[in-house]
Length: 85
Length: 319
Image 1 (cartoon, rainbow over the protein chains, first blue to last red):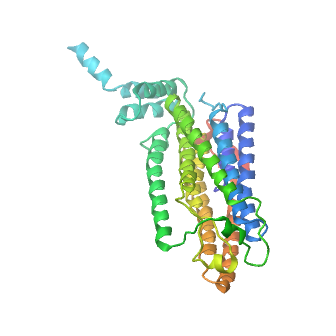
Image 2 (tube, rainbow over the protein chains, first blue to last red):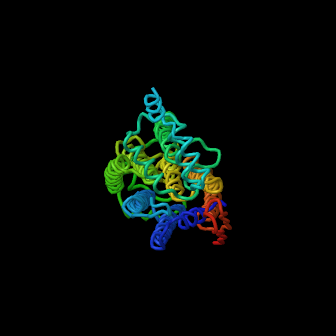
Image 3 (cartoon, rainbow over the protein chains, first blue to last red):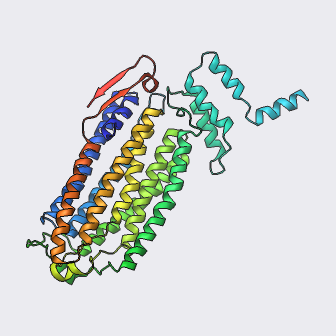
């Protein structure tokens, strides 16, 4: 057991409503997409398709999007755990 | 006299036998586990008393199966998170300062001027497809610093005013994520993390400059916090703890490989050496990507036993 997928799955099973579990699934999907774009941009830079400045800007925007999305989703989104949290 | 003794017992938190008695009479296991820290642990001076009392009251009124303390653990989940953040934030700042001083001592830094960028081209003959300028990168750093600072301040307030321990743990970890990111981008904005010139060879032979690998240091901390946030939503048990620890370990391993790859690119000391270093860097990058895929999305067999899922729920998921 070493995957984030397992961790999100375990957390999703703890949530009390299917809507919350779907929300967590959406958070996992968005995390998956944004995290996979980082090595994609790095590979593009290594292959010469983009320059270092473009790569750095893309990193900043992806970092901003992923962290902001995660922060807003976990704090503003009202997850209801099985114990009422 | 008897009244005074009873008062002292009540004030010193000797409700443990009462709670133990309740548990023995059939109360939930979670009620017992969630009550123990209030009695056995010393009070936390940093924590407001009314908040802690509210948290304990909430825990007692809303017991969650298996969500109290791990087996054999002496700290609550919230206390573990607070200790983690308290240790990690100074460690990150120390490592950041040490790395910046190390780069200065090695003489790897360069000025990111427009002339450098104009002369820049990639080493194997392709023109660099730069869509943004150095000013654009600075603007991105500035925007990120502002956004992360504001979010860190907001999440700090959420942490201060939340009552439920799980929500307090999540808010504290999200605050730590945004705080570390704000420090990282703030230091870039202040010029503490200038781009590296890799012994000047990149600039003289190929014109390529690279941004410093200190971003990977930030990622080590922030992604670990992020995984821990998801871990806060899982039941607290030995299997969940193992899963969180292994996920963080492999995640840090992937980021370390990325930093090594980045460093290999920086450390090329000649045009011929660069080709060798590039091949090594690409090989490391491929290994890191494979491991990254395994950590993030690979199918994993997971079995959740009754200790985690509660009585009557045996969940076996393959995904």
